[in-house]
Length: 171
Image (cartoon, rainbow, N blue to C red; front, top):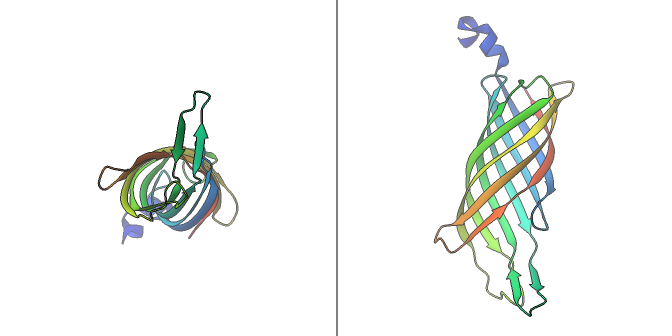
């Protein structure tokens, strides 16, 4: 029906699948994501990723004898996002994204943190990237996000900044 009423809008619609991986920028770690996307126009895309980010534990002792410890851990999230492409999906160009993810955080178990715990989390995020369309509806992309991970009981709060590169296929 949409094809009959507005053929230019209907031809711009697409569905896609994507996958990406990369390091975290502020703390040692890595991030993986896979998802689906729907583009009602060439400039607007709704994305639903499932992502897993792992941060390494670390202990640091300063010159004055003060010791700080970061537990690290794995955060698994369902991350719906809205992505806006300035030049459209068919051209090389930048995009911005914003979303609100939800999932679970499982901190690392170490000698200093021996208890196994699991916490429900929410993570608002924003970021941006660049997309490079190739042949056959395939697009390469690289993006950075800043996510503020908040535990359900407000006892867990940290920032995660994954930088991922990946590939998307639109059909």
